[in-house]
Length: 301
Image (cartoon, rainbow, N blue to C red):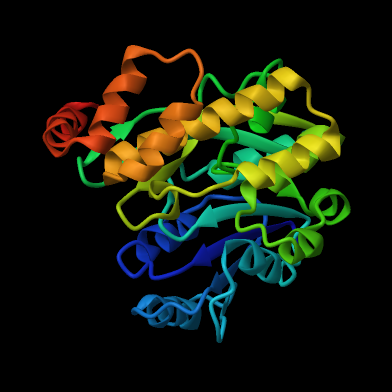
């Protein structure tokens, strides 16, 4: 099999049709399979998936009996993939180009040393019904991409992987044992540190942001990043950037969700404070300021 489209779902009943329809519309010169791992959804997600699987034999779906979490479900679903290449698509995102899979596979076919190719993606803000085009354009830079992955991190939206590289360089079982929750930072860090990679400089995927999406919530990944900092010997400057980004992200989350305690911790640990930091801090501490800042957030495109 040339390609496996790897899809994880959890309570995605509102979005899974968009994801699957976008894959089924793909124009390719090769056959591909769609491997779905549903992480014990409690809504109608898996029933919808099963109806698609009845009509399309190359869709192979499995629902976990118990919720495994993202990383463990990613690995379990990956183990069921038979493709030479793996394209990972979240159950609430969609392919915005009908040629996306062909373009990504062609890039890997031409560049035999690449462990993966990353491509552009749009961001659709569901609650504002607005789209930010080619959101990661500045990130797709040969000189700075690996450093950005290390210090800031980036979702693997739009990435197509060579399965042999994932099997060789990413120790999923060990990361599961360590209690890591996410897959994108470990995967992209291990591959950028050990392999060559490339880019497709156009937007092929749409990344949906909504209130229940995992990316819309705050998560503490400092310990995870510090593990990789030790594993690969990051510089002091890189470690400082990791911590600065961590506390800034924590402050943003505290201001969005009104968490005074988290706001205090984040603000206290930020260095080189700017006006924005003070505004975010006040938003995390004062209800009136929180409402004012929220109003301006809704106007922001």
